[in-house]
Each structure stands twice: as C-alpha cells, then as structure tokens.
Amino acid sequence: MKKNQGTTNGCDLSNKRLENLESVIKKYRQDFSSVGKALKEIRDGRHYHKLSFKTFGSYVTVRWDMGRSHAYRLIEAFVVIDNLSPIGDILPSNEAQARPLTKLNLFIQKKVWRDFLKTGKPMSALNIKKFVSEYLGVLAVKSQIPQSPMRFFHQSGLFHIF
Image (cartoon, rainbow, N blue to C red):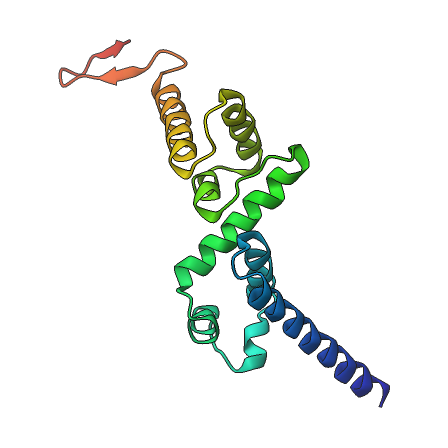
C-alpha cells in the first residue's frame, strides 16, 4: 500500500511541477530565459506526456501556439545564459542576441562573450552575430593551416613533401 501512496504522491508532485512550469511560461512569456528554462525542464522530463501530448513539438504548438524550432531556440538561449551568468552581470538580453553563441561549446562561449564585451560595441544581435562569425572564421582558417609537413602523392608515384 505504501508504494502506491508514494507513487500517487510522486505523481501529484510531478503534476504540480508541470503546473508551476506552465505558469512560468504564461507569466514570463517575454522573458526568454525563464521560458527557455521551463520548456527545457518540460522537454527533458517529458512532462508533456501528462497532458496527453506524444511529442514536445506538438505540445508547444498546441499548448503555446509556438513553433517547435522557436521553442528549441529558447531552450538553447537559456543554456547560453545559464552558462554565462557566473562570469558577469552583462548578458544577452534577448534570444536573438544569445542565438549566435549557441554554435559554440560552453567553454568557448565564455571566452567569446568576454572578448565581445571587451570590444565596447553596442550589444545588438547583429554585432554579436558578426563577432561570433569572425571568431569562427579565424578558427576555420587556423584549423586549415598544417601543423606539420604534409605528404602528397603525385600521379607519377613519387611523394612530395610540402
């Protein structure tokens, strides 16, 4: 009997958590980070099943009139904000500003964000996007520079070292 009571209580707590998460989405619809955090927990915990939705995509579309891709962008933006928050008070202020940073791993996000802030450029989605693109371009060029001599096989069958 106690197992069933524990399961019922656990189910009740889980349902209350879902209600709490959905109230965050309703209340903070314009706060991308809070909404992204709530959506991430709903997705990761598969809480949408409790409302008879088979997929997270159908849940956000029907329940919130939100496209699946937008929901995932909000989740990714929350992950960026969560990662950057320990390094300073100045954070991207909307999902569009955080979006370019989602292309970077968590460690590089911090480095690139610090470097962007040092430029003193206005914090706009376009400026952040350009900065991240330039950074990725520099990395791409660096990764193409050979670190040791390369061997090249010529049609004549001879090896040429460059």
